[in-house]
Amino acid sequence: MAGGLLLSAAMTALFATALPVQDPSSGIVDPPPDKIVIKIATVNGSGCPRGTAAVAVSPDNTAFTVTYSNYLAQVGGDSEPTAFRKNCQLNLIVHVPQGFTYAIASADYRGFASLQRGATSTEKASYYFQGSSSTAAITHPYTGPYNDNWQATDTTDWAQLVWAPCGVQRNFNINTELRVNAGTSAPGSTSFMTMDSTDGDISTVYHLAWKECPAT
Image (cartoon, rainbow, N blue to C red; front, side, top):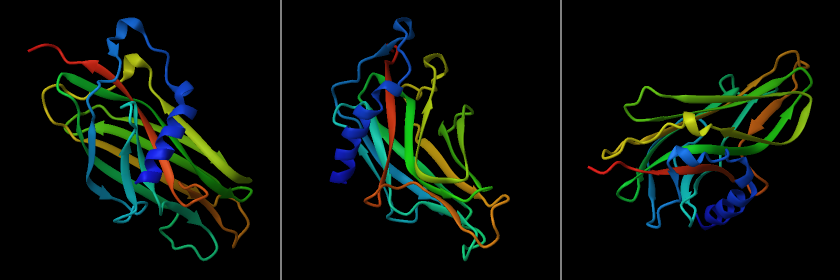
C-alpha cells in the first residue's frame, strides 16, 4: 500500500494537466481539508482475483489510486479461450467530509501491450453511483503492430460530471475491461495487453472534483 501512495503522488503530479479547465460558475470548490476514506466493498472479475486490487487516497484529497497486480488479457498461442477478455468490477465505499459531494473528473490508466500485426485491443471503463441511472463509459482502442507501454486518460467536462448524491451513502462502482482480438494476425502468434508497470503493479489514478452540498 505504501508503494501505491508514493505512485499516487507521482502520477497525480504527472497528470494534473489532464484535468478539464474549471468553470468559475460551476460551483467547484477546493478539496475539503478533512480526510476522505475509501474502502473496497466488493471486488469481482477475472482481472482482479481476490487480494490483487488495493485502493489508496492521495494526501491532498485530489485523487485516489486503484492498484492491480494480476490484470492481463491475451489471445493466440496457448492462451485459454476466455483469456481474451479480462474485467474488474470495484464497488467502493466512499466516506467524504460532511457538507461536501464529489465527482470523478478524470481517470488515468496505463500498462503494456504487445499486439501482432492485424491484432487489436481495447481498454474500457465505466463509472456509476449505486442506484443511479447515469453511467459514463469510455473506450480506448489500440492496433498492432504495437509493442510498448500504453496510456489513456478519461476526462469529463465539468457540465457533464456525475455527482454523488448529498446526504445519502451511495457506493461508487468502477468497471474496467481489457479485450484483445487476434484479428488477422498470424496463426499461433500471441497478443496481450496488461494493466501493469515494470514492478508488476499498476496505479490507476482517479481525480476528484468537489462541491459543497446545499444547506438543509
